Length: 319
Ligand code: HPA
Ligand code: ZN
Image (cartoon, rainbow, N blue to C red):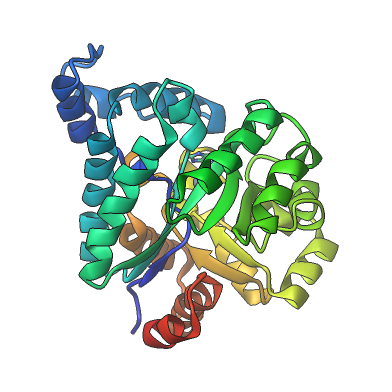
């Protein structure tokens, strides 16, 4: 029975910052942290909603100070992904959160891409998606896309994350339009804490090819019909949704209903260091909680391969 995932499409590199690595980087960079040890930090991972998580997630970024730190963060994630059976990963990077703290875009991008390159040589292929921050002014999003283009770094696409409850998708049309004009692939978070209309907005206004989360689309039958007809990939993150209070429990998660509605859903880990598990653990727990069949699991595995931004040759290998 295919229970193990091979493709991860919704993973924030900053969300793989494990407490042990946070403390090690703090020591290396002489950053004072208010935590006695990793367990002390871990005990604070009780979130009431997306914003309560983002506050801690963003505060912890302070330990990432150099290109080497970004290399080590990425390498640690890739090693963990390989043990989960991941053969292809498309990973998010919140570039603006780091340039906003004074880091140079090239230093951040080069650190990440060096680790991705090393892992690619060992057979784990990857793509880097720079996520624009919805809570920051849209002019900064355009600037971030320009930095990506100017850096010459190997970046596959542009996404958007952070809180969904501020600004309209149309504010980011210039940034997404610039990325699109230069051949970058496009995705966006929507329909996680925001209503179904946000899913339609990122499709219609930003012209994204995938939607990250998209789970609240289930509240709008006409939108479900559209997403199923167009086979728009939705990168769903079950453990994240429960930890952030989008659904009260895994047993109440709509993943199975989404599959049964013919949606092109995939299972992913979002911010595994914070939400209790990498993609393999997401699969294990959601399979048990929703009593997913071998057929469901085969569909999820196939969906992720079809939704990946890879060429035909790599897609055939991953199938
Ligand atoms: N939603 C929005 N922004 C994020 C998330 C998320 O689940 N994780 C990291 N940044
Ligand atoms: Zn996310």
